[in-house]
Image 1 (spheres, rainbow, N blue to C red):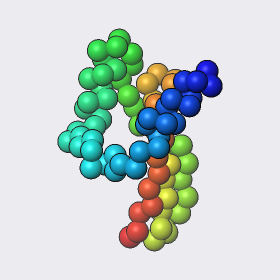
Image 2 (cartoon, rainbow, N blue to C red):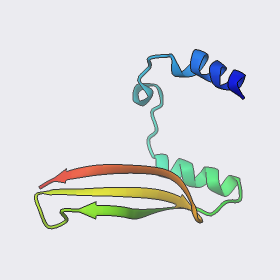
Image 3 (cartoon, rainbow, N blue to C red):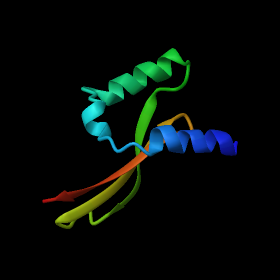
Image 4 (cartoon, rainbow, N blue to C red):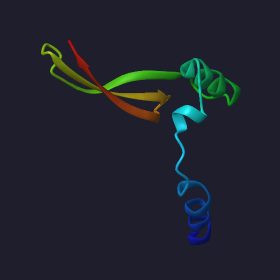
Length: 81
C-alpha cells in the first residue's frame, strides 16, 4: 500500500496544474447523473448539510451530493446580498 501511495504522490499529486482549466464541464450534474445511471446507482441528490446567516447579508451554506445514502461530494458557498 505504501508503494501505491508513493506512486500517486510522485506522479500525480506533485504536479502543479489548474484542474478547473484542464477539466471544463459544461453541465457537471448532468454528467454525474448519467454516470450514476450507467452504474445502476441512485441518481445524485443535493442536500443542505449546514447553514448559517440565512437572514443576514452573509449567508453561508454547506451542501452534500448524495447517491442513496453515500455522500459523493461536499462543498460550500458564501452568498453576499
